[in-house]
Structure formats: C-alpha cells, structure tokens
Amino acid sequence: MSSSSSTTPLAEFGKKHVTKGLGQLTSGVMTKGQGSYMAFEDGRNMLDFTTGIGVTGLGHCHPKISGAAAAQCMELVHGQCSIAYHGPYLRLIEALLPMMPDKSLDSFYFWNSGSEGVEAAIKMSRIITKKQNIISMQGGYHGRTFGAMAVTKSKTIYSEGVAPLMPGVFQIPFPYWHQLGLPSTASEEQIVQQCLYQLELVLKQQSAPSDTAAILIEPVLGEGGYIPAPAAFLKGLREVCDKNNILLIIDEVQCGFGRTGTNFYIENSGVKPDIMVVAKGLANGFPLSAIISRTELTDKLKPGQLGGTYAGNAVACAAAIAVTEVMKEEKILDNVNTRAEELYACLNACRDKHPSIIVEVRGKGLMAAVEFASPAYSIYDPVHNTTAPKSLASRVARRCIDKGMLLLTTSVYEVIRFIPPLNISQADMQKGCNIFAEALDEVVREG
Ligand code: PLP
Image (cartoon, rainbow, N blue to C red; front, side):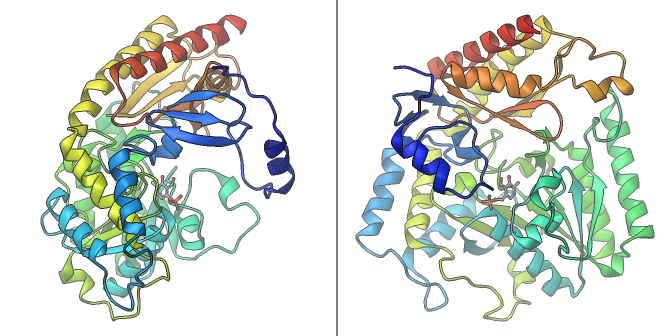
C-alpha cells in the first residue's frame, strides 16, 4: 500500500468547495477507519497516531461500539431530552456513575461537543454561584464557540478578528516552565508556587473572589503542549476555591476516558471537581459530551436553563455505553499503561540520541509529547537549543505522514503530540515508534 498522497477528483472538489477556515493535516479523502488505521481514497492506509484528535480511543469502528450504535438506530435515533428522557441517556448515567473520580459527582447532563460542554459548565457556574468571572489558564484550550473561545488562551488564531469576546475572563499561567520563562530543569515546586502566586494576585488585583464564579483547567494541558498538571497545583486550586466559594471546573475533554491510564486524570491528585466536562473518548467518535456535577449544586438550576435540540442523542449515548463496556472487557487501562512504557522508552531514546534537539519528553499514559528546542528558547536557556533547525516539529510530523503515520504538532512551541488508540497493539506501537525515530533522524541529518 502506497503512503504518499496523490490527488483525486473528490479531493480537488473538496479544495474548491470546503470553506477555507478549516485547516488540514494532509490532503486526500478519508474513506475507511479500521482499528488503528485510516484508509484514504488515494490508496494510503495510515497508522493513526491522532485518533481524530483524541476521539477514537478504542480504534476506528470498534465492532461492539458500531454495533451498539447500529442497533440503537433501529430503535430510537432522536428522543429529544426536553420532551422525555430516553433509555440510553439514563443507562449511560448508570454506566458512568461507578467510573467517577469522586462519588459525590452524581448529576449528569449530555450535550454534543466539548465546546458545548464547556459553555454549559460556565453557564452553570454563573447560575449556581451568582457570580460572573471565570479564571482560566494561559495555554488552555476549551473550544471554538463564543464562551469556550473566550476562556481559550492557547493560540490567537482561534479568536483573531472576532472580538469582543465574552467578558469577565482572567488568566493565570498553567504550570509549564516554558510559558513561565524558566528552563526545563526548573523544579516542580518552583513552577507550582509561581502559578499559585499569580492566582493570588489575580484574585487581589483583577477579579475579586466575590466576583469569581469558577476556575477552569485542563488537568493535562492539551492544545497548549501536553503538560500534566502537578497534583500540588490542582490541590492548591482546590484550596483557593474552597476558601472563596469558587467552583472548580475540570475539563477532561481530551485527557479523560482512559487516555492517561486512569479513567480520569484528576484521580491521580485526589482533587474533587465541582463540575467535570468530558467528551472525545466518551463515545469513540459519536458526538457526545457530558457535564458532570453534584446534585447539591445543580439543584439550583431551573428546568429549561439547560437544553439543546440534539443534546444527549440516543445513538451517541448507546455508543458511549458500549465504550464503558469495552473499557472493562478489554482491560483498556492496562493496555494504556503497558503501551505507554514502550512509547516513552522510544521517545526517551530519541532524546538521548539528540540531546540538543529534544528539550523534553513528557505526558501521561498515551497522551505524550516531545518538545524540540525552538529558536526563541535560547534567549533565556543557553543550556539547550542552538543546533535545532526551525519548524522541526512540523517537519518531523510531515515526514512521519510521508512514511505512513498520521501525527500532529501542537502549541505555539515546537511540540509533537502522540495520541494513539488506547487499544493499540504492541506491533503497531513499535511500528509508530520506528517511524518517528527514523523521521527524526532524517530531518536532523538534513539540518
Ligand atoms: N476542551 C478540550 C480540553 C479540548 O481538547 C477540546 C477540543 O480539542 C475542547 C474542549 C472542545 O471540544 P470540541 O472540539 O468537541 O468542541
């Protein structure tokens, strides 16, 4: 099977008629997803280390999940939830309850996408606390609708030219050495202290606790560079929230549902969210998000304040129930942790081979990243850099695509992110690692 792309009439049609604002990693037309592979109309069959940006965690077209959706299609497709609850909606809650990182999370509301989930969480936090301001993280990504866009601070492209955005949004830095202007060797304690100090300042200088409804965080910064938040930072946020009657919203849209080796990343810290937003892996490709909170909080909402025509679609809910079953039956968390060891071993070996090029290998479970030295970086950290060619991340990712593996860059820095299927086989993980290592060697050799 060839891996180089060639144009087809359908691909040319797309170039002309699909609205330009949509970026594309590779040209060509996807035709069939099967397990860890994505086939294209031009004959390529690509190993998929993007999983549709962290969505198809259980592989493309998992038979049990597709089967559950197909069966549901013949029973009930759209049972509008403001008319009556439908069976899959309620059975999905039953399946999710035992997975919750904190047993007090017992109030569920489903919508279609991560952005809508974040919108609902913001809205709920304002209604519940009767306060307006939201504090989010520098580098955070929460979606492209207006509220979600306002709290997103990862790249200006998402909001460029569309101001005014939703007001009442404030930022503190996420604990990431690069954003703080520190070397990658900076201690976790120093990084966490700096960020919590900035939070204290924001609450004193910009958004009084009496005006602040919520602090919103991706516990693993996704779009901003795949950086797991230290437990000490999450605990610090929780303490500040408790002291000031502020809600803590945890956005697990990208890092949730087994991606980091536990059901939810927040479990690692023992921190209890007030509201948790989940999407992507929840339904393995069917559009579905969950906004999860505590009834003691959500009882403050009035009927009709939440809703949406397609919210909690029956087919998507049936698929999500199957996802929860597959996670258990196929021991997915065990596979994530075993495959992750292999992936980090490969990435660390690459770093050891190219110490002046790779600044950091990081991540948790199968949410992994490699950060390359970037030209601006040398200004404040002469230890690394200097030999790093420009746009290394894009060039390596492109080379991987040429070699038959879909791979994404991320963040404003030089970062490649690895988001393989959670049920990837050992052989396919090895194949992906080999492709990356070869691509890196070639690009470095070329300079
Ligand atoms: N939150 C996080 C952490 C995300 O990674 C994303 C999407 O990548 C979103 C929210 C928005 O989700 P969606 O694209 O489904 O609207």
